[in-house]
Image (cartoon, rainbow, N blue to C red; front, side, top):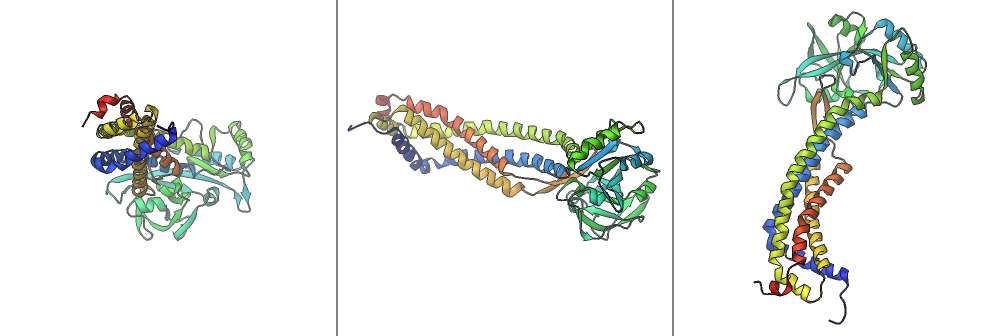
Amino acid sequence: MAGPINWFSQIASVTKFGLMSLPQRRGAVAATVIGIAGVVAVLVGVLSIAAGFKQAMTVSGSPDGAIVLRSGADSEMVSGLDRDATRVIADAPGLARTAQGPLASAELFVIIDLPKRSTGTDANVPLRGVEAAALQVRDNLKIIQGRMFDWGKDEVIVGAGAAQEFSGLDVGSKIQVGRYEWPVVGIFSANGGVSESEIWSDAKVLQAAYNRGDSFQSVSVRLNSPAAFEAFKDSLTSNPQLSVKVSRQSDYYAEQSEVITRLITTLGFLIAFLMAVGAVFGALNTMYSAVAARTREIATLRALGFGGGAVVVSLMLESLLLALVGGVIGGGLAYLAFNNFHTSTMNWQSFSQITFAFRVTLELLARGVAWAAAIGLIGGLFPAIRAARLPIAAALREL
């Protein structure tokens, strides 16, 4: 040989020969690509549920918003505040104010049963009684169909997510509230936040319907600025008239989403891991088949001066390429099948349904492709080592 062959040229040559032989092994190659695509599609699809649920909760929190509950309560369902307490909260320093008064909404939270559109089974849907400041306390909340309910009347407006997910919530229809039927007069959006899962009415009217007297479960407020939170919190928690817990809206909703997102994420990785084990064996089978089919070719290249390292790297690259193709296909399928798919699930903190849309993000797609790459590298490693260790003389005699 005139001179040593460049190592990178060796890798390129062996890889090229390997890729050219793929049509001869199309059955095994297709099985590997499809298996890895399935792993990635399932992983990304399941994790998109957690991402969508978390997004619905976190977009609900305004940086200058806060929520006040009874001390020790971890959700509105187990909280309780009387009218005197809500007045003290509305007078606290740091609270934003307009000509109409402080931006504080004392609210009541109850649950009603409504059938899901998809299955017809009953689900717990949150019905929230609010005060006039509620629309200013929350970000990006607007009426998109119909009108706002009239204060003092038995009327409701419905979140866009709830209207899409549950039956009987179209504008003009009526829902059963206590012993009465209340008309739906409008539908509102909240930038995909948790409020879109709710039905809203006048808090005073809802109190009367459920015989709640003058009691509430929470107070949602808007502050002068995010920096005003500590002063607002300290003034309430140090007030002997009150026994309350004060949280930023963002922190409160993050806590509400933690249990569900952790559960879904854990299950997603567990299912994907079990499927990945099978995909690794598929990749091993494909690459061992490749080595067996190219035994004489590899031995000839070795006899011509190609190094064992170049053979290992080239076979690893071939396996990695097949895995990446599978990863991209799986990610694409997950995006088409799951992204923006609307559903609802139980919020175990409030025991009510939350509507949300699956979110297939770039981060999830990158994570799926990374899993595919790992499967490909593991699946190609041992066959590549075997190929590099083939005795040249014996391999040249193989048919």
